[in-house]
Image 1 (spheres, rainbow, N blue to C red):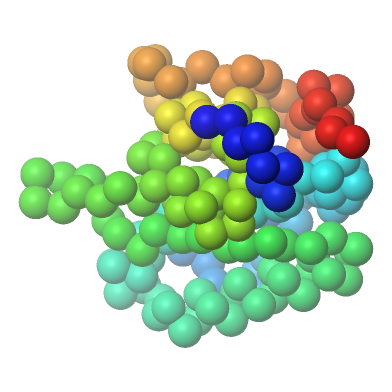
Image 2 (spheres, rainbow, N blue to C red):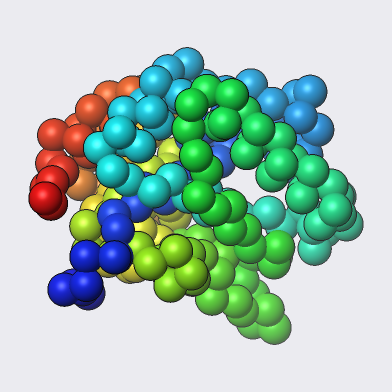
Amino acid sequence: MQHPDLSFQKGVFLDKDGTLVTDVPYNVDPARVTFEKGVFEGLRALQDAGYKLVIVSNQPGISMGLFSEMELDALIRYFEDQFAENGVLLSGFYYCPHLPASETNVCECRKPEPGLLLNAARDLSIDLSISWMIGDILNDVEAGNRAGCRTVLIDNGNETEWLEGEHRTPHYTTGFFPDAAKYIISKTIFRG
């Protein structure tokens, strides 16, 4: 959706595990977080190009009883601190605490549903039509495409199913986060 009001900004929605950091399942321990090579370089470049940076992450470990929201909140503060120490502002961290969908459990926020992106866009005045989603699996791509963003798949081996379908084709595929950022910037329309 287009917004003539220039207060609406462009954003990059970022999957956390496997995209920004090495995927350690159900991890909320900052000591076990390893940022992928070149992530902060890419994030700074995106920020310099005018993008708000927002993490959108499925966190079913909460519903599974593997960790608490308080523990996840501490990890979110760690991410905010790490971003700041590297000259980057994290504009938001949105997560889905729900289990995968079933007949008795359906939510609108668990990727590939677009709810996390839609909520963040509303809260942060982000224009989805000029925004991007970067993730390491096709559920991330689908969520971004369904929200109205363009999408980049970080093909690092984490996608194992390769289920095709509507909304599951990325606009660009790369193995490295800095290349994803470079591609997005090459497609950026600067207002001014």
